[in-house]
Length: 486
Image (cartoon, rainbow, N blue to C red; front, side):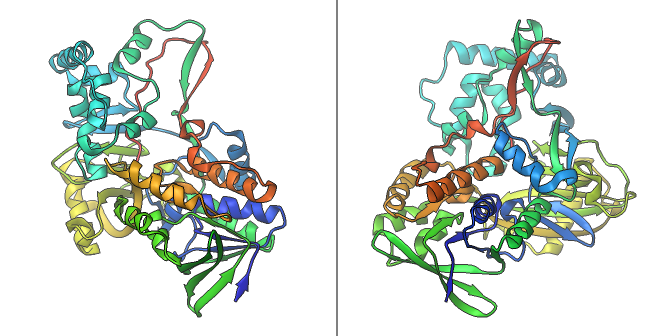
C-alpha cells in the first residue's frame, strides 16, 4: 500500500499544475496517469521524429499567474509565434476570426447583400427563444451567415444538429460580438479605447505543449513527487463523506494508495462509476448519460517544404469529412526533423464506435490523402507517410440534458469532504488549458489554506477571451468574430 498527502488523478494541465503547487508547499504528491505520456489532451505525440498536438494548443491567457508559470517552466523554450488561421469555404479562404470586410467581400456582392438582409430580418423578427446554438447565433448574425460560417463546422465537431447544442456554449465562445459591431468598428472607429485582439501571435513550446507538461513532471519529481504513468484508477474507496484510497492498475498489478486529500481530472462519466460504496442511483444514472465527442488526428508527412502559411485551417466543406487541418511546422519549425518536409494533422471529429473511429489506421491515412487532394491542400502523391492518434472524450457536449445531469453530480460530489474535481473533464466544461490550470490552483488553495473556492463556478471569461481594451493609437479596426475554436 502506498501513502501520500494528496493523490491527483490525471497528469494533464490541471492535474500537473495542482501536483506541482502542492509539492512546492512540501506535500507528498502521487499523480496517477492512465496514458504512457503526460499532458492529457495537451500532450504531444511523436512519429519518426515528427511532433504533433492532439489538436492545436495556443498558450494565451488574461491571468498573470498562469503566464508567469508558463515562462518559469519553459524559459527560452517558450516561443512567441505568429498566428494565421483561416476558413476554407466554397473553394475560398476567409480570415479567422471572421473580419467583416474580408468575409463580405470574399462572399461576393450578391451573397453579401443577402447576408446583410438576413441580419436585418433577424433584428426585426428575432427568435424569441434562445435555447440552442442555432437560435443564439442566428439572432446575432442572421440565418444566412449562420449557415455559411457556423453550421457545417459546428455540426462536424459535435456530431449533433445545432438545434441540440445549448445556447450557453455559444455565449461562452462569443463575447458581446455581432455582425453590426464588426462593420461599425470598421466604418466608424470608436474613440478612446478599442478592442485589441490577442490573435496575431501566441506563445508555444518549442516542441509542442507536451514539452511543457513533461518539464513540469520532471520538476515535480525533483521535489519528491511521483508521476505514475500507464496507471489506470479502477476504484475510489470512500467511507461516508470521506474518500480513503484509490485502487489503480499498474504493470506490477493492483495497488491501493491512500491519502488525506484527492484531486481528480478524470471524466465524470467514468469517475462516478468507480466509487465504492457506489454513488446514489440518480448520480450514477446522471454520469452515464453525460455525452462526449471523440476525436482523431491523421498525421500526413508531405514531401514539400511549404504547403500554406496558416497554423490551422477550418474546413467548412461538406465534400470532405475533415474538420480542421493543422500545419505543425508553422506552429514551430522544431516540430519537424527535416526542413524540406511538412507534417499536417487532419482532424476528424467522431464518436467511439462509429465508422470513422472504427477504420483501420491504413484506411484513415488513405482517406486523408484523398481529402487533401479534393480540397487542393496537397497532392496525394506527395504524401510519403502517415499515422493516426485517437483521443476519446476530447470534448464534453453541451446537449439539452447536460445541465440537469451535471447539477445532480455536482451536488453529490459536494458532500465529499476531501475530494475535488478540476479541469475540462473533471468539471465537464469546454474550457482551455489556462482555465483548467486556474481551477487546479484554487483547489490547491482549498487544501493548503482551508479556503472554500467553488471551482465549478469559475468564469471561463477570466482566462479564455482573446481580447483586451487598450487606448486607441490607430483606431481603424475591424473587430473579429471568434466562435469556432475546438
